[in-house]
Amino acid sequence: AGGIESFPGRRQALKEFTLEEVLADFKRKDIVLGKRRRRDTAEEFYKAYKDIDEVMSYQEDLAVPILKLQTVAVVKG
Image (cartoon, rainbow, N blue to C red):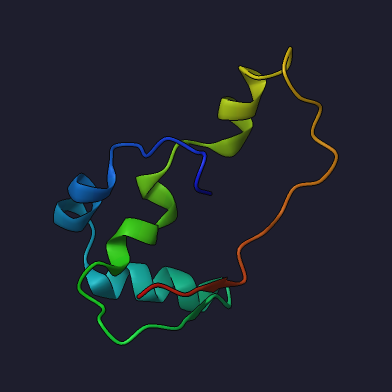
C-alpha cells in the first residue's frame, strides 16, 4: 500500500483510532500484527487510507489492474 495516498493521514489516524479498535479489526480479518512497539499501529488501520478502488479509478488511463491483493500481515519496525 506504499503508493496509496493516506486519508486522512497517518498522523491523524494515531489521534482518531485507538489501538484496541485497530487490533479488534485485525482480529476480525485474521490479520497478524508482527511488531513489538504498538503505539503507531493505527497508521496501518484501513480507515487511514483512501479506498483502493476509488484511487485506481483515477488511474484507468495509466494501468490495467490484473490482480487485487489482500492484507494478511502487517510487519513494521
